[in-house]
Image 1: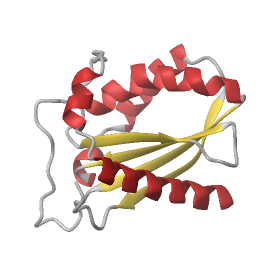
Image 2 (image 1 turned 90 degrees about the horizontal axis):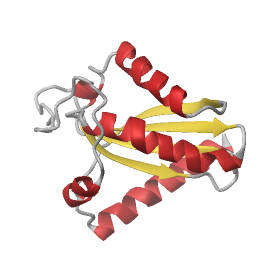
Image 3 (image 1 turned 30 degrees about the vertical axis):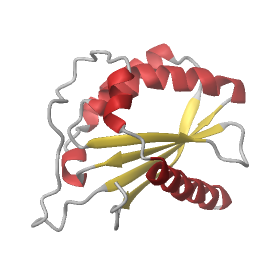
Length: 160
């Protein structure tokens, strides 16, 4: 419980800093090496929210992973940047990804994924996720588990 409160505080602080620094996401993404993982997502246009649909909104997904040893975090992040980041960037609903570390745990890492459209994000099938997770497991050989997952609706985002 304490870890989730700390992570949520880190999450809020992270997005506040992001707002103030005015990071240009497009120039950042153009510098990131793209790897073709043969998935079906298109990166040529981004999804937008259908304002007439109350079931569609901008969202945040929080994933907290726990690794067996703290020294595995660097490798975990490297494999994630090769496998998951390019995969997510090809999804029309994907907006940004933040990586944070809980202050009270040296074996945990948290990902804050921001999505432009909840509905488009949820079109990703479990089969697609499992296929990509298998690629990740082939490259990251150490034990890990998902400790916590939470989906959040963004209520206000006028700083973007």
